[in-house]
Amino acid sequence: MKGYQMRTSVTASVLGASLLLLVAGCNKSPNEQAADNVEDNAEMRADSVRDAGENQADALENQADVIDNAPGATDARADAVEAEADQVRNQAEATADRIEDRGDATADAVRDRP
Image 1 (cartoon, rainbow, N blue to C red):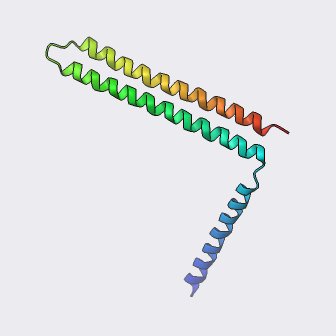
Image 2: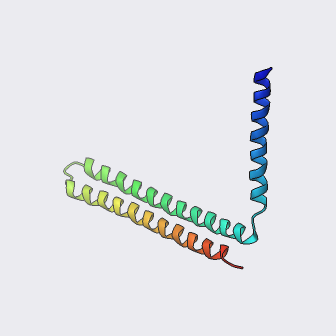
């Protein structure tokens, strides 16, 4: 009986906390909702840039492996392609970071509107 009461109490507490979070989410101001949308969109765009960069870098690394395994191939060419893959990956990450930073700045400005 004691275990049942404890489970019931825990369940009620969890439901109560969930209800509070739900109500808090519904009471967002229009500015807060718009700011959240700006941040979400920036994050999605940044993720797309990262994914594209990663796909391009992976393709370059595969190309480097083919070059490296070719008969009579020199390591210099494969190394150059691998360096290019690293550069593509780093540029994609930097671009994604700028997108997120811009999204955060815009969202902050939206939140600060009267």
